[in-house]
Amino acid sequence: MPTGGSMRGTTVVWGDYGLRMKDHDRRVSAKQLKTGEDTIRQRLRGLNYRLYTRVSANIGVYTSGNEVRMGKGKGKFDYWACRIPVKRIVFELKGDLHEQVVREAFRLAGNKLPGLWEFVMKGDPPIVGLTKLKDGITLEGLKQARRLPDTEALKSTPLTPSSKDTPPNTISTTA
Image 1: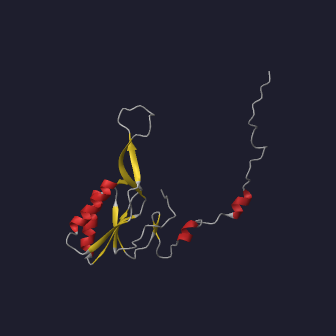
Image 2: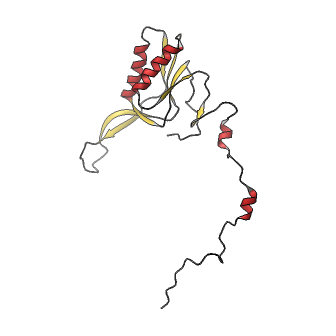
Image 3: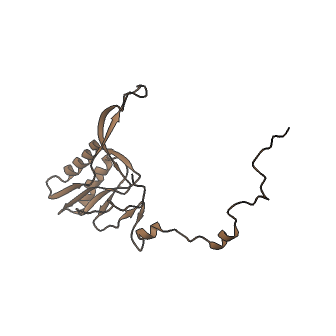
């Protein structure tokens, strides 16, 4: 699971509008993804559009029953799921649609999916972690140190304590 430093998958690539995860990482089941997709299709029924799903449920979830002792294997297959990192685009939509109609469809889908979601458009800046790369903020700038270390303070403080100031850590056992 990416924890930051990557802007891959945070911008709209194929469509004009997108639905992006807003809060922290989540595990979303294939059933929940299908429900969100069906909600978008239901709201836009009869209109000319193309829906792209940018994630796929490729992780099998296995469970054991309640009150089962430890051991005895992995358990039986339960459902498919996918891990969605923070600020990842999940759905993209392309077509001759009004922006408010698409916003409403994505709002309805976001209400049925776990977590918080936001509406994005093509041309919105990419995001690294929680920071948008716009107005002079670059990926290289985020990777650099925020401030330079003070060389005067580093020279004046010793790295190891002197032996005069601290007592020895050994205990003598003399009888």
